[in-house]
Image (cartoon, rainbow, N blue to C red; front, side, top):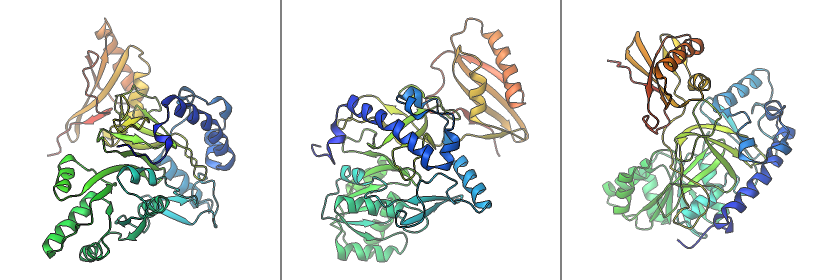
Length: 418
Protein backbone atom coordinates (compact mmCIF):
# COMPACT_ATOMS: atom_id res chain seq x y z
CA UNK A 1 0.00 0.00 0.00
CA UNK A 2 1.37 3.40 -0.97
CA UNK A 3 -1.46 5.60 0.29
CA UNK A 4 -1.77 6.85 3.84
CA UNK A 5 -4.35 8.86 5.71
CA UNK A 6 -1.75 11.52 6.56
CA UNK A 7 1.97 12.05 7.02
CA UNK A 8 1.79 11.08 10.71
CA UNK A 9 1.55 7.42 9.78
CA UNK A 10 4.97 7.30 8.12
CA UNK A 11 6.98 9.71 10.28
CA UNK A 12 10.19 8.65 11.92
CA UNK A 13 9.46 6.54 14.99
CA UNK A 14 11.74 8.69 17.16
CA UNK A 15 9.92 11.84 16.04
CA UNK A 16 6.59 10.25 16.97
CA UNK A 17 7.86 9.28 20.41
CA UNK A 18 9.19 12.79 20.99
CA UNK A 19 5.83 14.27 20.00
CA UNK A 20 3.90 11.91 22.30
CA UNK A 21 6.20 12.50 25.26
CA UNK A 22 5.96 16.26 24.68
CA UNK A 23 2.15 16.08 24.67
CA UNK A 24 1.99 13.77 27.71
CA UNK A 25 2.78 16.27 30.53
CA UNK A 26 0.44 18.80 28.92
CA UNK A 27 -2.38 16.23 28.92
CA UNK A 28 -1.63 15.26 32.52
CA UNK A 29 -1.79 18.89 33.63
CA UNK A 30 -5.04 19.34 31.72
CA UNK A 31 -6.52 16.20 33.29
CA UNK A 32 -5.69 17.44 36.79
CA UNK A 33 -7.18 20.86 36.10
CA UNK A 34 -10.34 19.82 34.24
CA UNK A 35 -11.23 16.39 35.68
CA UNK A 36 -12.18 16.06 39.35
CA UNK A 37 -11.36 12.34 39.27
CA UNK A 38 -7.84 12.85 37.97
CA UNK A 39 -7.32 15.77 40.28
CA UNK A 40 -7.55 13.17 43.03
CA UNK A 41 -5.84 10.26 41.23
CA UNK A 42 -2.87 12.43 40.21
CA UNK A 43 -2.76 14.64 43.29
CA UNK A 44 0.82 13.64 44.13
CA UNK A 45 2.06 13.84 40.54
CA UNK A 46 3.96 16.75 39.03
CA UNK A 47 2.90 16.59 35.35
CA UNK A 48 6.03 18.43 34.21
CA UNK A 49 8.18 15.49 35.32
CA UNK A 50 6.27 12.85 33.34
CA UNK A 51 8.10 13.05 30.03
CA UNK A 52 9.03 9.41 29.45
CA UNK A 53 7.41 6.00 29.37
CA UNK A 54 9.32 5.08 32.50
CA UNK A 55 7.78 8.04 34.34
CA UNK A 56 4.35 7.23 32.92
CA UNK A 57 4.63 3.65 34.20
CA UNK A 58 4.93 4.99 37.76
CA UNK A 59 1.41 6.48 37.60
CA UNK A 60 -1.61 4.49 38.83
CA UNK A 61 -3.71 2.48 36.38
CA UNK A 62 -7.42 3.27 36.38
CA UNK A 63 -9.44 0.21 35.41
CA UNK A 64 -12.97 0.03 34.09
CA UNK A 65 -14.45 -1.26 37.35
CA UNK A 66 -12.94 1.73 39.17
CA UNK A 67 -14.43 4.13 36.64
CA UNK A 68 -17.82 2.46 37.17
CA UNK A 69 -17.49 2.62 40.95
CA UNK A 70 -16.69 6.34 40.84
CA UNK A 71 -19.62 6.99 38.52
CA UNK A 72 -22.01 5.00 40.72
CA UNK A 73 -20.84 6.75 43.88
CA UNK A 74 -21.19 10.18 42.28
CA UNK A 75 -24.66 9.41 40.91
CA UNK A 76 -25.79 8.16 44.32
CA UNK A 77 -24.92 11.58 45.73
CA UNK A 78 -26.69 13.32 42.86
CA UNK A 79 -23.35 14.46 41.45
CA UNK A 80 -21.57 14.21 38.12
CA UNK A 81 -22.86 11.25 36.09
CA UNK A 82 -19.34 10.70 34.70
CA UNK A 83 -17.76 10.32 38.13
CA UNK A 84 -15.55 13.37 37.59
CA UNK A 85 -13.73 11.98 34.54
CA UNK A 86 -15.23 14.19 31.83
CA UNK A 87 -13.76 17.60 31.13
CA UNK A 88 -16.99 18.60 29.39
CA UNK A 89 -20.33 19.79 30.72
CA UNK A 90 -23.75 19.39 29.17
CA UNK A 91 -24.42 21.63 26.19
CA UNK A 92 -23.20 22.24 22.67
CA UNK A 93 -19.74 20.86 23.47
CA UNK A 94 -21.23 17.48 24.40
CA UNK A 95 -23.76 16.56 21.69
CA UNK A 96 -24.38 13.02 22.96
CA UNK A 97 -24.00 10.71 25.95
CA UNK A 98 -23.75 6.94 25.54
CA UNK A 99 -24.05 4.01 27.94
CA UNK A 100 -22.07 0.79 28.15
CA UNK A 101 -23.00 -2.17 30.40
CA UNK A 102 -22.79 -1.23 34.07
CA UNK A 103 -24.01 1.27 33.13
CA UNK A 104 -20.93 3.33 32.39
CA UNK A 105 -21.77 6.67 30.78
CA UNK A 106 -19.44 8.07 28.12
CA UNK A 107 -19.49 11.64 26.79
CA UNK A 108 -19.13 12.41 23.11
CA UNK A 109 -17.36 15.68 22.35
CA UNK A 110 -18.05 17.91 19.38
CA UNK A 111 -14.64 17.65 17.70
CA UNK A 112 -14.45 16.43 14.13
CA UNK A 113 -13.79 12.68 14.11
CA UNK A 114 -14.04 12.70 17.91
CA UNK A 115 -13.48 8.92 18.15
CA UNK A 116 -10.60 9.01 15.59
CA UNK A 117 -12.07 6.32 13.34
CA UNK A 118 -11.32 7.89 9.94
CA UNK A 119 -7.72 6.62 9.95
CA UNK A 120 -8.85 3.02 10.47
CA UNK A 121 -11.47 3.34 7.74
CA UNK A 122 -8.91 4.68 5.31
CA UNK A 123 -6.64 1.71 6.03
CA UNK A 124 -9.63 -0.56 5.30
CA UNK A 125 -9.95 0.99 1.84
CA UNK A 126 -12.75 3.52 2.29
CA UNK A 127 -12.38 6.80 0.43
CA UNK A 128 -14.18 10.13 0.11
CA UNK A 129 -17.48 10.30 -1.82
CA UNK A 130 -18.37 6.67 -1.06
CA UNK A 131 -21.52 5.39 0.62
CA UNK A 132 -20.99 3.23 3.72
CA UNK A 133 -23.60 0.87 5.15
CA UNK A 134 -23.12 1.23 8.92
CA UNK A 135 -24.62 -1.67 10.90
CA UNK A 136 -23.28 -0.83 14.31
CA UNK A 137 -25.88 0.02 16.93
CA UNK A 138 -27.02 3.64 17.12
CA UNK A 139 -28.66 3.48 20.54
CA UNK A 140 -27.14 3.34 24.04
CA UNK A 141 -23.62 2.29 22.94
CA UNK A 142 -21.48 4.69 20.85
CA UNK A 143 -20.43 2.27 18.11
CA UNK A 144 -22.77 3.60 15.43
CA UNK A 145 -21.85 7.21 16.13
CA UNK A 146 -18.14 6.36 16.34
CA UNK A 147 -18.17 4.99 12.82
CA UNK A 148 -20.46 7.64 11.38
CA UNK A 149 -18.35 10.52 12.66
CA UNK A 150 -15.22 8.88 11.24
CA UNK A 151 -16.91 8.32 7.89
CA UNK A 152 -18.01 11.95 7.72
CA UNK A 153 -14.47 13.10 8.50
CA UNK A 154 -13.30 10.91 5.63
CA UNK A 155 -15.83 12.54 3.31
CA UNK A 156 -18.20 9.56 3.06
CA UNK A 157 -21.98 9.34 3.20
CA UNK A 158 -23.49 6.92 5.72
CA UNK A 159 -26.61 4.78 5.66
CA UNK A 160 -27.43 4.16 9.38
CA UNK A 161 -28.53 0.54 9.05
CA UNK A 162 -28.07 -0.40 12.68
CA UNK A 163 -28.83 -3.99 13.69
CA UNK A 164 -31.70 -6.37 12.96
CA UNK A 165 -34.28 -6.26 10.14
CA UNK A 166 -32.14 -8.43 7.89
CA UNK A 167 -34.42 -8.36 4.85
CA UNK A 168 -34.57 -4.56 4.96
CA UNK A 169 -30.76 -4.47 5.24
CA UNK A 170 -30.53 -6.55 2.05
CA UNK A 171 -33.06 -4.33 0.31
CA UNK A 172 -31.18 -1.17 1.25
CA UNK A 173 -27.88 -2.61 0.01
CA UNK A 174 -29.45 -3.72 -3.26
CA UNK A 175 -31.02 -0.33 -3.94
CA UNK A 176 -28.42 2.05 -2.52
CA UNK A 177 -25.36 0.10 -3.75
CA UNK A 178 -22.96 1.03 -0.90
CA UNK A 179 -19.23 0.67 -1.48
CA UNK A 180 -18.82 -1.23 1.76
CA UNK A 181 -20.04 -2.26 5.19
CA UNK A 182 -19.03 -1.37 8.73
CA UNK A 183 -20.19 -3.46 11.68
CA UNK A 184 -19.63 -6.88 13.20
CA UNK A 185 -18.48 -9.66 10.88
CA UNK A 186 -21.19 -12.03 12.09
CA UNK A 187 -23.97 -9.63 11.09
CA UNK A 188 -22.56 -9.09 7.61
CA UNK A 189 -22.45 -12.87 7.19
CA UNK A 190 -26.13 -12.99 8.19
CA UNK A 191 -26.91 -10.29 5.61
CA UNK A 192 -24.96 -12.06 2.86
CA UNK A 193 -26.64 -15.38 3.67
CA UNK A 194 -30.07 -13.70 3.68
CA UNK A 195 -29.34 -12.08 0.31
CA UNK A 196 -28.47 -15.49 -1.11
CA UNK A 197 -31.69 -16.92 0.31
CA UNK A 198 -33.66 -14.05 -1.29
CA UNK A 199 -31.84 -14.44 -4.59
CA UNK A 200 -30.44 -10.91 -4.35
CA UNK A 201 -26.93 -10.00 -5.54
CA UNK A 202 -24.92 -7.40 -3.63
CA UNK A 203 -22.10 -6.65 -6.09
CA UNK A 204 -21.28 -3.16 -4.78
CA UNK A 205 -20.19 -4.34 -1.31
CA UNK A 206 -16.51 -5.02 -1.86
CA UNK A 207 -14.95 -3.94 1.44
CA UNK A 208 -15.73 -3.98 5.13
CA UNK A 209 -14.33 -2.81 8.44
CA UNK A 210 -15.19 -4.98 11.42
CA UNK A 211 -15.13 -4.52 15.16
CA UNK A 212 -16.84 -5.67 18.32
CA UNK A 213 -16.00 -9.37 17.98
CA UNK A 214 -13.38 -11.80 16.70
CA UNK A 215 -12.61 -11.93 12.97
CA UNK A 216 -10.82 -15.27 12.46
CA UNK A 217 -8.96 -16.10 9.23
CA UNK A 218 -11.65 -18.63 8.30
CA UNK A 219 -14.30 -15.91 8.23
CA UNK A 220 -11.93 -13.53 6.42
CA UNK A 221 -11.52 -16.17 3.71
CA UNK A 222 -15.28 -16.75 3.58
CA UNK A 223 -15.85 -13.08 2.78
CA UNK A 224 -12.96 -12.99 0.31
CA UNK A 225 -14.54 -15.85 -1.61
CA UNK A 226 -17.59 -13.62 -2.02
CA UNK A 227 -15.61 -10.61 -3.17
CA UNK A 228 -15.53 -8.74 0.16
CA UNK A 229 -12.20 -7.67 1.67
CA UNK A 230 -12.52 -7.20 5.43
CA UNK A 231 -10.26 -5.52 7.99
CA UNK A 232 -10.36 -5.27 11.77
CA UNK A 233 -10.29 -2.25 14.04
CA UNK A 234 -9.81 -2.18 17.80
CA UNK A 235 -11.72 0.51 19.68
CA UNK A 236 -13.54 0.93 22.98
CA UNK A 237 -16.42 3.11 24.11
CA UNK A 238 -14.13 4.89 26.58
CA UNK A 239 -11.13 5.55 24.36
CA UNK A 240 -12.27 5.49 20.74
CA UNK A 241 -9.86 4.01 18.20
CA UNK A 242 -6.80 2.26 19.61
CA UNK A 243 -5.43 0.27 16.66
CA UNK A 244 -6.37 -0.89 13.17
CA UNK A 245 -5.48 -3.52 10.59
CA UNK A 246 -3.72 -2.74 7.31
CA UNK A 247 -3.34 -4.54 3.99
CA UNK A 248 -0.21 -6.18 5.39
CA UNK A 249 -2.37 -8.37 7.65
CA UNK A 250 0.38 -8.44 10.27
CA UNK A 251 -1.09 -7.22 13.54
CA UNK A 252 -2.83 -3.93 14.27
CA UNK A 253 -1.10 -0.53 13.97
CA UNK A 254 -1.62 1.86 16.89
CA UNK A 255 -3.58 5.06 16.39
CA UNK A 256 -1.47 8.22 16.32
CA UNK A 257 -3.18 9.89 19.30
CA UNK A 258 -2.85 7.29 22.02
CA UNK A 259 0.02 6.07 24.17
CA UNK A 260 -0.27 2.31 24.66
CA UNK A 261 1.47 0.16 27.25
CA UNK A 262 1.26 -3.61 27.75
CA UNK A 263 1.36 -4.41 31.47
CA UNK A 264 1.32 -7.53 33.58
CA UNK A 265 -2.34 -8.27 34.48
CA UNK A 266 -3.30 -6.99 37.91
CA UNK A 267 -0.42 -4.51 37.97
CA UNK A 268 0.78 -1.38 36.21
CA UNK A 269 4.15 -2.86 35.37
CA UNK A 270 5.06 -2.87 31.65
CA UNK A 271 6.15 -6.21 30.23
CA UNK A 272 8.84 -6.82 27.61
CA UNK A 273 7.90 -6.46 23.96
CA UNK A 274 6.36 -9.70 22.75
CA UNK A 275 5.05 -10.74 26.16
CA UNK A 276 1.26 -10.92 26.48
CA UNK A 277 -0.29 -8.50 28.97
CA UNK A 278 -3.10 -6.03 29.54
CA UNK A 279 -3.55 -3.12 27.15
CA UNK A 280 -3.30 0.17 29.07
CA UNK A 281 -4.04 3.37 27.15
CA UNK A 282 -3.42 7.05 27.77
CA UNK A 283 -5.49 9.11 25.38
CA UNK A 284 -4.64 12.62 24.23
CA UNK A 285 -8.36 13.48 23.97
CA UNK A 286 -8.80 16.73 25.96
CA UNK A 287 -12.56 16.19 26.43
CA UNK A 288 -12.26 12.83 28.17
CA UNK A 289 -8.62 12.68 29.31
CA UNK A 290 -8.19 9.09 30.46
CA UNK A 291 -4.71 8.47 31.87
CA UNK A 292 -3.35 4.90 32.03
CA UNK A 293 -6.78 3.41 31.47
CA UNK A 294 -6.80 -0.37 31.77
CA UNK A 295 -8.92 -1.84 28.99
CA UNK A 296 -9.03 -5.33 30.48
CA UNK A 297 -7.95 -6.71 27.10
CA UNK A 298 -4.87 -8.84 26.49
CA UNK A 299 -2.44 -8.24 23.64
CA UNK A 300 1.29 -8.06 22.90
CA UNK A 301 3.64 -5.80 20.95
CA UNK A 302 4.90 -7.08 17.60
CA UNK A 303 8.51 -6.34 16.72
CA UNK A 304 9.54 -4.38 13.65
CA UNK A 305 7.67 -1.95 11.40
CA UNK A 306 4.49 -2.74 9.50
CA UNK A 307 5.13 -3.90 5.90
CA UNK A 308 2.52 -1.36 4.81
CA UNK A 309 5.07 1.40 5.49
CA UNK A 310 3.36 2.71 8.62
CA UNK A 311 5.92 3.23 11.34
CA UNK A 312 3.86 3.15 14.52
CA UNK A 313 3.99 0.26 16.96
CA UNK A 314 1.94 -2.83 16.16
CA UNK A 315 0.07 -5.12 18.54
CA UNK A 316 -1.17 -8.64 17.93
CA UNK A 317 -4.83 -7.76 18.37
CA UNK A 318 -7.26 -9.03 20.97
CA UNK A 319 -5.91 -12.09 22.80
CA UNK A 320 -8.45 -12.45 25.62
CA UNK A 321 -9.41 -10.76 28.88
CA UNK A 322 -6.99 -9.68 31.59
CA UNK A 323 -9.38 -9.89 34.54
CA UNK A 324 -8.72 -13.44 35.79
CA UNK A 325 -10.10 -13.02 39.32
CA UNK A 326 -11.01 -16.49 40.63
CA UNK A 327 -12.88 -17.71 43.70
CA UNK A 328 -10.91 -20.36 45.59
CA UNK A 329 -12.33 -22.00 48.71
CA UNK A 330 -14.75 -19.13 49.11
CA UNK A 331 -12.06 -16.44 48.75
CA UNK A 332 -11.48 -14.23 45.71
CA UNK A 333 -7.90 -14.28 44.43
CA UNK A 334 -6.85 -11.47 42.06
CA UNK A 335 -3.98 -11.23 39.55
CA UNK A 336 -2.70 -8.29 41.60
CA UNK A 337 -2.21 -10.59 44.59
CA UNK A 338 -0.08 -12.93 42.51
CA UNK A 339 1.98 -9.90 41.48
CA UNK A 340 2.31 -8.86 45.14
CA UNK A 341 3.70 -12.30 46.01
CA UNK A 342 6.23 -12.30 43.19
CA UNK A 343 7.46 -8.77 43.91
CA UNK A 344 8.87 -10.12 47.17
CA UNK A 345 11.24 -12.40 45.22
CA UNK A 346 13.39 -10.60 42.63
CA UNK A 347 14.86 -13.94 41.51
CA UNK A 348 11.42 -14.94 40.11
CA UNK A 349 10.85 -13.89 36.49
CA UNK A 350 7.23 -14.95 35.91
CA UNK A 351 4.50 -16.84 37.70
CA UNK A 352 1.12 -18.47 37.16
CA UNK A 353 -1.38 -19.60 39.77
CA UNK A 354 -3.09 -22.81 38.61
CA UNK A 355 -6.31 -23.87 40.36
CA UNK A 356 -7.21 -27.55 40.07
CA UNK A 357 -9.53 -30.11 41.65
CA UNK A 358 -13.30 -30.17 41.75
CA UNK A 359 -15.79 -27.75 43.22
CA UNK A 360 -15.48 -27.53 47.03
CA UNK A 361 -12.15 -29.36 46.80
CA UNK A 362 -9.86 -26.71 45.30
CA UNK A 363 -6.08 -26.96 45.14
CA UNK A 364 -3.80 -24.19 43.97
CA UNK A 365 -0.25 -24.32 42.74
CA UNK A 366 1.90 -21.29 42.08
CA UNK A 367 4.24 -22.10 39.20
CA UNK A 368 7.25 -19.79 39.13
CA UNK A 369 10.09 -19.36 36.68
CA UNK A 370 13.53 -18.87 38.23
CA UNK A 371 17.17 -19.74 37.73
CA UNK A 372 17.67 -19.82 41.52
CA UNK A 373 20.23 -22.35 42.70
CA UNK A 374 18.33 -23.16 45.91
CA UNK A 375 14.82 -23.94 44.70
CA UNK A 376 13.59 -25.80 47.79
CA UNK A 377 14.31 -22.93 50.16
CA UNK A 378 12.79 -20.47 47.71
CA UNK A 379 9.65 -22.60 47.35
CA UNK A 380 9.17 -22.64 51.11
CA UNK A 381 9.44 -18.86 51.33
CA UNK A 382 7.03 -18.36 48.42
CA UNK A 383 4.57 -20.74 50.11
CA UNK A 384 4.62 -18.51 53.20
CA UNK A 385 4.01 -15.46 51.00
CA UNK A 386 1.02 -17.18 49.38
CA UNK A 387 -0.59 -17.68 52.78
CA UNK A 388 0.27 -14.14 53.85
CA UNK A 389 -1.26 -12.47 50.77
CA UNK A 390 -4.22 -14.72 49.89
CA UNK A 391 -4.96 -16.24 53.33
CA UNK A 392 -4.98 -19.61 51.54
CA UNK A 393 -2.50 -22.46 51.39
CA UNK A 394 -0.91 -23.41 48.09
CA UNK A 395 1.95 -25.45 46.76
CA UNK A 396 4.85 -24.03 44.77
CA UNK A 397 6.36 -25.51 41.62
CA UNK A 398 9.74 -24.22 40.48
CA UNK A 399 10.26 -24.04 36.70
CA UNK A 400 13.13 -23.03 34.46
CA UNK A 401 12.87 -19.61 32.73
CA UNK A 402 10.75 -19.80 29.58
CA UNK A 403 8.63 -22.73 30.76
CA UNK A 404 5.30 -20.90 31.16
CA UNK A 405 3.18 -20.14 28.08
CA UNK A 406 3.24 -16.57 26.76
CA UNK A 407 -0.52 -16.05 26.87
CA UNK A 408 -0.97 -13.38 29.54
CA UNK A 409 -2.54 -15.72 32.08
CA UNK A 410 -1.65 -15.03 35.68
CA UNK A 411 -4.43 -17.22 37.13
CA UNK A 412 -5.50 -20.38 35.33
CA UNK A 413 -8.73 -22.05 36.44
CA UNK A 414 -8.24 -25.72 35.52
CA UNK A 415 -10.90 -27.13 37.83
CA UNK A 416 -13.47 -29.69 36.78
CA UNK A 417 -17.06 -28.44 36.95
CA UNK A 418 -18.78 -31.71 35.96
